[in-house]
Length: 168
Image (cartoon, rainbow, N blue to C red; front, top):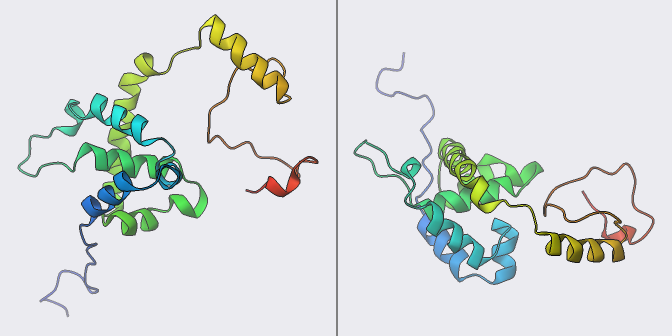
């Protein structure tokens, strides 16, 4: 009988290196930052400035919450990934945080973004619609005025044009 330990296998704690990761992210190239967070440095900082004082990031316990910028970066990495890239284990090792923290950070960020949606997600003006429609027409999408970057549309077969660029 095991009486001296709570767990049979030792509990693995990830080293708390998320601030090092954030420093790497913030000083990384625009391309690397985009690959991980699916946004620009500037847009990320603007969003952090909009959300950092939200009550969702405040708690009444003694333990202080993780920096809102870290919570946003973790959430964007998770939401911007698919398949194995979205695996909690990979994100946890990258930021040095637990699976539970990743889920909690993502829930908080989504909750805050839902509060902001009416302020930040707006339909384009008539002039913007015309401009985008012309660009979309030239690219072979008549009647389209925009799209959401990063959305996946499953295709049943490789496209005939530029098929080598197709992957998923």
